[in-house]
Length: 435
Image 1 (cartoon, rainbow, N blue to C red):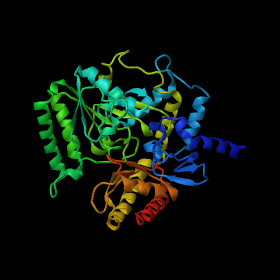
Image 2: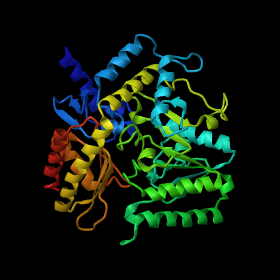
Image 3: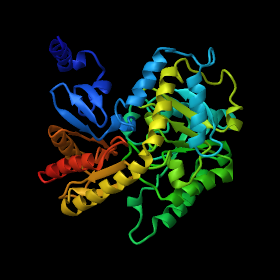
Image 4: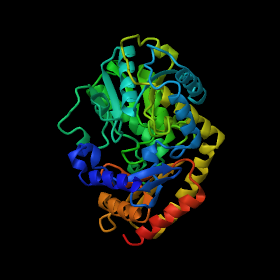
């Protein structure tokens, strides 16, 4: 009977375009799976796939962690839906209390929603409401979501904005990509000075700083290519915002919950934003996010200025609490630092052996492997797809990012072991030998 059911839904997979929009159904690699556990997907083809994607940085504690599953089942026995505000329930308040303990100081008030994009929308709306200023500044290469407000500050790929230019009033500044630093110059000195010049030009010629509500950025670029800026540059952004009364928003949707070896990248770089958007790894796969700010800011955002029906779902909040417990009790941030350093060391060795690798970069278990055309030296999305497909044939799932898809993302669950990393990188090296 189970075999017949598998065959029935696989028949639907073959005609997926009849059911799902191409924008939902055509991502890489569209792998039919029947189960996930720990660091593995189990395919409908009977193959076990080592997952180096974590469901795109969502399953930080691994797929279907027993503590998370138990929390979900217990929650279902009591309550399935809020909505928060009409009723109130234990899981949302206890989750907020626990988040206060792990976030930077005074980021202690929460508006819970369902996705990273919603958390970004909330942050932008909060900043504009509180400051009563119309404009927003974002940074080139950052990705913040695909709703119209989030899209207005997303510049990782121009295709996301094609035929749907958002109406929000935004300006862009260059992100600090260390690859753009002149040779022989310290990036920690070059990029803060460059930022001062870029900001001065923007404020002198395009927008008065007194009309700017906020600056928004990813402290480490995700979809834009896993770009890690100099710490001094982020501190300079903070300084400029303070100078002009501009609120600073960190998009920590992908960098949060242990991914960088700390709870959040704000702690990794020692830079505190005024508003933070968190999601992805928060609830081990259930839809949950939050716009986070101080009580002082949030208290200026009254009832009716923002709202939600499904945000802060009680089951998702229970899963999030269990996930936080797993990260703490199993020392997953320590594991992210240790396993990340080990993986980057092996990848650097590969870079020396295989010219197709142009760069290896990362913090914790957020690692980017950039590939190039060996003849031209140009970033190569085609090479990345070739490598990804061949790794998949050998049972290892990677994902891509970068402006032209030229970067392999390596973002395994934080529960990953050295043996599993070695296996995945052995497969990658086998493939690189053929590219």
